[in-house]
Image (cartoon, rainbow, N blue to C red):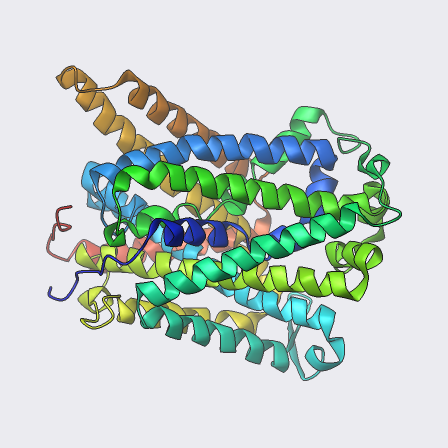
Length: 464
């Protein structure tokens, strides 16, 4: 296969922005009532910090693997190189759905935001109803426009997509802290509204771990870093510091937005009121229309940076799978001028264009499945890091016990969070619809593997 070499145009700022922008999406601004109902204010803060710490352990293992294999494909490449083709396919298949579904989910979220801000325009032209959710033509047009727009941005080259990402992330952070400053200075805001610290009827540990179970979905995005490793314009040794910065920034933004939602009135009353958009209502009550405008700008930046970041991650993953003949060679071709996999980007765009026609409820079914796919990628990465670090340790003094312990801890954490999703009755257990979607995706993967992958000749990933 020719023309598969990517350009090295990703700076440290670009990689950090890709990770932060992919972590912070629409969910950060729409899910605070759910966070509070699950855990309470203190339970949420402890849960998000505990989850961030767990992600840092996993991030340390990702950075270890990036230094060993600075290649496109990230978790897929590690699973393929260490455990073989079958494990590589399982990892890649789970990740590819997660990444593309996040582009789709972010795009449909634009319609939800538009419906809140301009209902007279975006609640017209109802076409049909899917799972109790009306599908409106203006919302479809809006989603389609931005899916195509960010596909075009990405097809122009990594440098353009990167500069766009950095600018949008800086605007996102600025808008979030303007909302925080305005909320703290607003009359009627009281720290007493944050009580009680934990959700009623639940033990504190249940509150905390109900948030921890959501962490793979909430922090999905820092794993876009290894997907772009082949395009780094800097030493891979900087990887962990970038992941650390991205996870810390993401955790702070989640806490700021959730507490801003809870400070305006007692959070239990807010949850019980079942507002269409509680965070927007809270900001309107404290800051008025200007505050909602700033919040809307932050949301748009979060949505657009998520779409942009997952375009990068999913297209590089498809490139890596193509190199191993787990996808058609066409997906792995790199444009000689832009030095990006334009065919993969086009495919991601086409698949994403299907989603807006099914409404937001149907898309929300893949949230838990996306978490499951992501954590499987984490588990493979930590297991691969353990295999390498243990082998290094047995060979002699060059090995490190610290690397072995870190890899083992990451694998245990990944497996534990996966069990929170898979075991019925656990705090973060997947719902029926998510299980159905998950089963369908697994079945499609089995069929594809048996009919395509096993019949393809072996092809090695290029050496780092």
